[in-house]
Structure formats: structure tokens, C-alpha cells
Amino acid sequence: MAHRRPSYFRFSSVSEESPINWFDSRILMIQQSCVSCRTVRGEIHPPGGILYENERWMMFLRSRPPLVAGQGFIVLKRHCENVAELTTDEQALLGVIMTKTAQAMMAVLKPEKMHFGLHAERVKHIHMHITPRTAELPAGNIPLVWLSSWYGLVERLKLRQPISDATVAAVAEGLRGAFREI
Image (cartoon, rainbow, N blue to C red; front, side):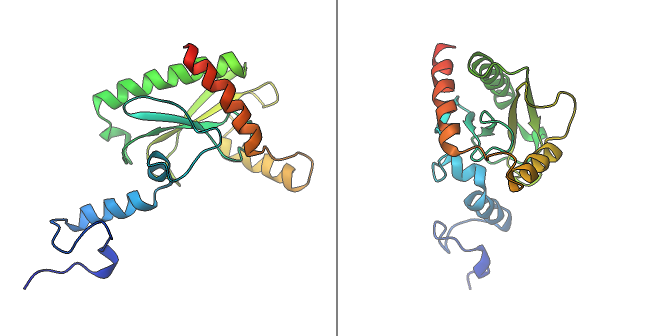
């Protein structure tokens, strides 16, 4: 009698005869629901689209950014949840895309400073948060979670307008041109 996986481990792309174990099933389930994996596959379209990519990473701007229209992400093209599991190639190409992203942002947005952060708490997929710190944002080591919460409150109180995806897309177009020139 053939072993049958429980129904919650069945996927339309995996047949009963597939030699897939529980761990492979869990990874497949995560990849199907992971927002970063869905963006890499083209199921989610960030405002302004993908601005730059290399063999291992892609860069795009965030939808409805809480701080500035240039906030974005650098996302690994494969699902990985632990920095210790990055390949040598992925490590090297991350440095390249970070440098090009900083150069493009400095050319277009002219921020006071560029911030890159790796959190991967809510979205487990390895990704870098990109925040160009403009003159309007406070300097110093202020956690983005607090700053985002503060700006969210200010928007709910109608003291500041939210940043629209149309504004983000316009910034993305300027950055796309800068990436071409780098």
C-alpha cells in the first residue's frame, strides 16, 4: 500500500506519486504563500516594477511606503530564511546590488544617508530594507518600526498625506534611468 500524504501537504503541482517528503512539502507551501517569492515569480507587481536585478537579487520600491517614496527592498530570488545559508555568489552579488542601489538613489533622491537593514522577521525570506534618509527624516539610530508607527499615526490624524503608489512609480522611473547610467 502506497504512503499517502495528509491533505494539508497536497499541492496542485505535486502528484501523489511525487517523491516529496514532509520538509519539501513545507518549503513548497512556504514558497507558494511567501510575498517575496510571489514578487519574484511576477504574481505581485510593485509600483514602478523591478528597477534592477542581477542573477541572484532584485530591487524594487515598496508599495505605500510609510516614510519616503524611495523606500524599497532588495530580495533574494530564491527562498532562503537564514543569512548563514547564502552562497558565496549570493553574498558577492548582494554587495553589487547594494552599491548600485545606493548610487542610483544618491543620484536621483539625493538623501542625506542611505540605510540598509536586514530583518526578515515577519517576512522570513531574506530581503534588505532600503531607506534613503532624506532631510525630513530624523538622523540617528531610530528603529524604522517606531518611525513607521509614528508616521502612520500622523497620517491617521490627517496631519500628513500617505505616499501614493503613483508617487512611488514616478520615483521608480527616475531610479530606472539612473540604474541604466551606472
